Image (tube, rainbow, N blue to C red; front, side, top):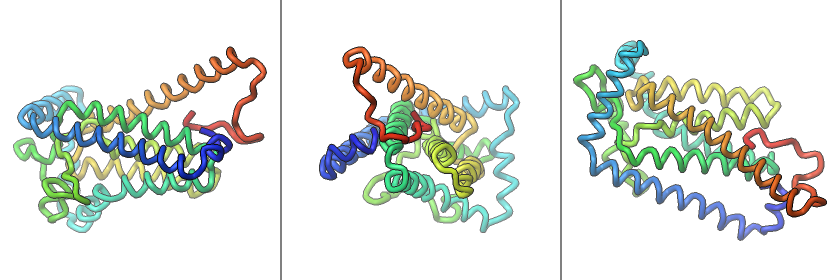
Length: 261
């Protein structure tokens, strides 16, 4: 959605639209969480199968990676905090930055984030347990060990779903943040988005909250969401051109093409 079209809607309608998108995603999240909690035993079976399959493909064992960090309590405590907080903070900061500083890009960035998030939540209707609750496979629940776990207790009045490990929403969001930062901004600070993605990938593994497969699927869904968003935008432009050959696009004169389009 372009800045001009946004302005024509007015601030009240724009705020209501944003609220509707967030409430829809929140509803999907709650539904996925409820489904997962009713199928905990299957979630454990799927997690065990994923770990075995990764080993068959020769991927590095996440438990072995975690063991290299276990002797460093401060690093683990920082990783637990990063996992609990930074994915939401970085996403909120990115959306606010795009809205305030790069308004022509905001609608398309927001829609891509909403699409990828919705697809991730739909996939999470199939419950998958995280590695941290598989101690028999060598994993340690370091968040519980340091009393930093966000699972099993209400967070802002909501019980976080611990059987929604696949795909990793943390990884999906950090990749979206990095893509927006690098493609929209020309500042040297844009590389903080890439650093955030790299740190998040390391954090989700050393805290035993996700398998490599969870991360790979998250990145794949981001790429598919990006492709779907571009295809939809192209189809919409062709349709508008067909019904109104003389109509010009609503993009601000001279505004760059949205990188997440």
